[in-house]
Length: 286
Image (tube, rainbow, N blue to C red; front, side):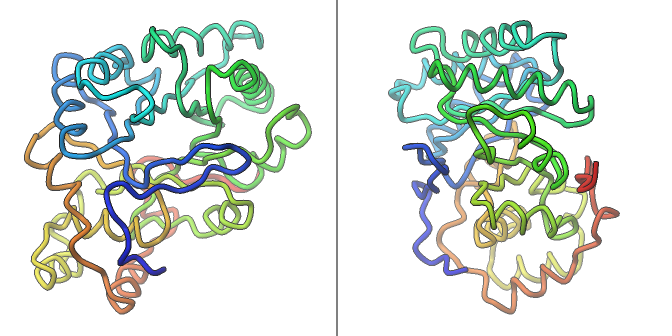
């Protein structure tokens, strides 16, 4: 896709909402509570306007504190969190979600995006959590709702129980050149579901990959910058994570260069399918 006009303030529209999601996000998975506030403040100062957390990460309060301390208006920062497990009833799951909202934004009382973290607990749990998220959305406590790690079958099944929202606004999945998940990406693109890329840096496991090193050298960029740029040019929303201030800043410095069509094809050629996953490739059948 054409990418020369991309900037750190670039956004994408979320289907059937007035919302725009920033094209670059900042992930805080495994960011310890004593470091998370500082990391988020560094990210916000570097120009990120989108932070992705989750109940599972146990740092929602710290993310909320960083937004408050940053001096930015709440409306200027896009906050995402995720519910990990169903509580046993829609009311119970809803209450778990409200707790997260209160941790992230005790003053305004909303998050921009609330996701179901995983489909793995089964159909009953998926339905319960989705109906809880719909309630949150109806009340304005979540401006958009979506899913994470969901395959085609899970999203199709949702048609049977959804009441207010289908398709989900977002699907957050593992994405990088070695794990491109083309079937679910194509499905999401066809249904205008925003695709977010977690682990876009492959947790640095591929830092010595010869193809990646060669491209980084050609562009005089870090391997991480090449990987983030790749995601942006694919139309995905990458969520790079770091607690190292220099890397946080560098990972946002991805707008002064373009990967050529040849470069993109080279990276596309690294796909290993499900075998390339380091966390979880989606299952597209139920």
